[in-house]
View 1 (cartoon, helix red, strand yellow):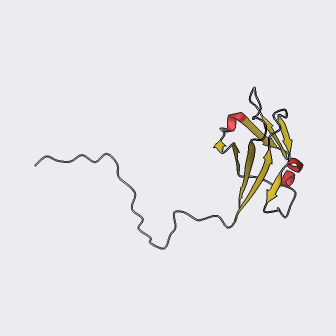
View 2 (view 1 turned 90 degrees about the vertical axis):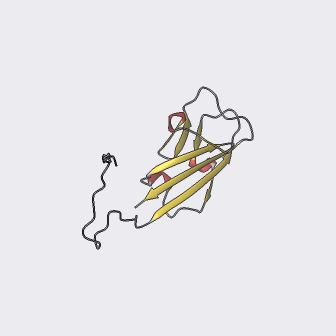
Length: 109
């Protein structure tokens, strides 16, 4: 029999009461939806319908991350910026006319 060499050893948690992971207290998800007009590179929060309606102004929210979907396809973070309540496309072209734009805002506390 050949001796097996250990490549990875995981630490053993000797205290079963300790937690390695603590879940967030709350997570807020706001979905903003609008339709492209094929001309604008910038969309303000007022151009979107929000689901659910947030308790605070979106411009003032401290967001954990955002996700952008154009025509149902998730977009890389390098293609857009969301700052101070304004979504800005950083691409050379804009989405085609009548294409849905969905912006998800996530806040983890």
